[in-house]
Length: 252
Image 1 (cartoon, helix red, strand yellow):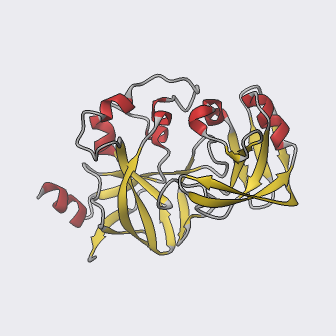
Image 2 (cartoon, one colour):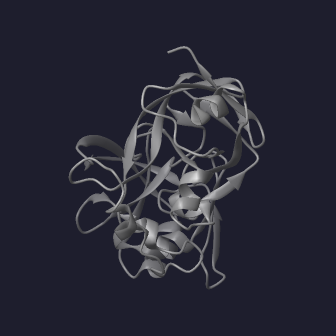
């Protein structure tokens, strides 16, 4: 009953909002965000393409991506690497499109010409291209991801940015799949638990593996073959949400 009471009395709050405009780059803390039906505005609007294999660059294989700061206003992309190199320019469309597989679904990558590819390729030590993608195209599951402070504490983690969730909720437990949540002006429906990979063991400040969170998840109740942490959610009603706002359960 404690869990239900916490949700229903409004003691659940949004404690963090985060996203990155460039897939794999450092997750940025925000005070507020607009949630549209296809996800948070500005989240993973761009990605890098593995030039050799013509696929979306995988962060788990390129952990130094986590050290890249990226800002995007819809026209100009600014990227900074740890060596102090900064590139700020509007990428130009080349007219080329690549349809790539992304976790079992097709993602259309609209290739861009910009100096960012050379900068980030040098940082990663490989050839890459920059691409513009549709909202939600390079997100693993549903467009909004959620973790809770209670689940983080049980894992012994204090840095919620490591899990790169859209929302961190101050709550003891994750809301169950099917739960409808009202937060700010938006309404979400929780879809499923999120399977995790080695990225959660990489320190987002250093790009070095420094924990064994993935191994710790093996001992928790889970579906066979998966190591989930947190949940994802679809947006039923678009709206603005902000840090500090309460979260409540709606009739499903």
